[in-house]
Length: 138
Image (cartoon, rainbow, N blue to C red; front, top):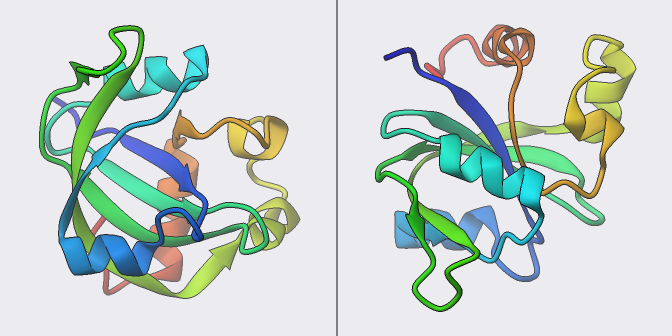
C-alpha cells in the first residue's frame, strides 16, 4: 500500500506540538466536519501527518505517523478517531503565508478552506516540504 500524507490542525492553546512531543502518542479526536472525518477514515497505519498550529500561529510545526486504523469514537459513534505517534518538530515552521506565497497549492483545501481541520496533503506539498527539510524523511 502506498503511503499517504495528511495535514491535521490543532489550536496550540488546546493541544500544542510541544505537548504532543512530551506525550509521544495521542488519539486524534474531536473532529466534527464531515469532510475532515472522511480524511481521518481514509488514514492507514504508516501514513504521515503534518501537524499544523491553527489560529495565530498558522503554520506547519511538526509531523507524526499514523499508528492505528481509524475507529469510531466511543463517546460519539458519528465521529472517528485515529492514533498518531510524534516524529518531530519542524524548525523553522512553515507558515500558511509562505505556503500561499509559493503559488503552488491554490487548489489545496488548506488554502481554499481555512476552517477544514484535517485533510489529505497533495504529493506536490510533500515534495516541497522534503526540499525544505532535506535531512528529514517524510
